[in-house]
Length: 494
Ligand code: SF4
Image 1: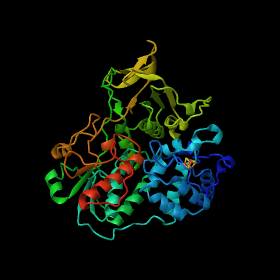
Image 2: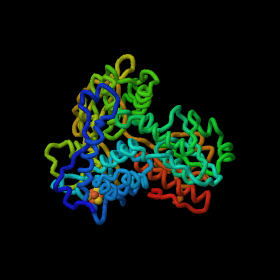
Image 3: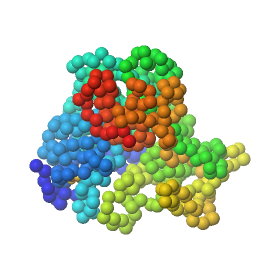
Image 4: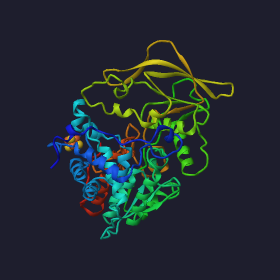
């Protein structure tokens, strides 16, 4: 039984971070790896703040955890110090809690009843509890390969090894299917490998999970572009079903601002991928921000990743631009009685380290030198307006412009759906108006026996949604192959 007054006895406390100067000297994770005994004691105190609500909004529903994580249950197990059972209950709904604990912006915390009032001291630190259960699980050997006891004799190809593809692979392998994951890159992990910086999640965290999947029987093939290196005919001949987990990596470009064509103006991924490759040991990044004035356009996750990466690379200055007003969480006078997510999460650890954020501004023009390289941006104060149909427009507040030095400009303004790939043409896959892969209520695309999950279906989204969709598509594929399924299906296609 939870302590219903725990939140009145203990304040919320987030995981401690490493000192800022240390963080900027390396690529290691921002959060401090404390001594286990000290860490576990602190996290047990945090778990004690959970009231075990009659209706736990954190757990599911439109605002809570898409995975249906059993949050009050494992909060109470942690409070009592039963880490092994907490691990069991956490893994019952989440294949990769160490990924979500590190990377998810925690919609569960926004949905927590304690987040409603400042007087309650803020949401339960669910993310911190989750990450710690996952870390304790690995430290104590609670995470072990779980092999299927029977074989279905069916073969499934999964295209893409990001979190959605890996979740689907693990579920289907454990259900007894022979699963092969194809990855076009030279290393596994998709966005987790080359999109997410090491300072948010160290790659060893990914690698130990991949090792578990291999031991369970999932096979991986890297450096293989399905549709090119393997034809659709071969795929159809060798597999009973296919899952497309190819992500939504087509970066949104700025096609209207004068000067976009200048050298030095790039999409965010042009910067992040080589930076992550450099950290993996592939040699210096071809897009390093070292010695440059860097402008990051866009106030979301990807923008913050560019910001922290450029800072660590040794940029002369880093400025992040956002058309929207300063989020409440960075205002001194915020006394809003309502949850402020996702705005509160628009402040990232990278922002504390160095650089500057500018709000309600937009670039009017990129200004180049005689060699055609960007050197400045013209900045304007703006307001974002929505018309009655919800369409957004950015309105300048005056003609006044400010000149900022800019040797490298990174466009982190979102993604527009799946990249063009021959595989989709050859399979006869239909796309939605948003550029994602369309599917029916059973996750099946317009190609029979071919399913979709993750960002490729949903559009660029949270890691927790990718895992939830990977688990759900596994249920659909299992039913398709065998006529029924006991696998969980936490979400339905949108
Ligand atoms: Fe605990 Fe918050 Fe969930 Fe209630 S909503 S069960 S307090 S975590």
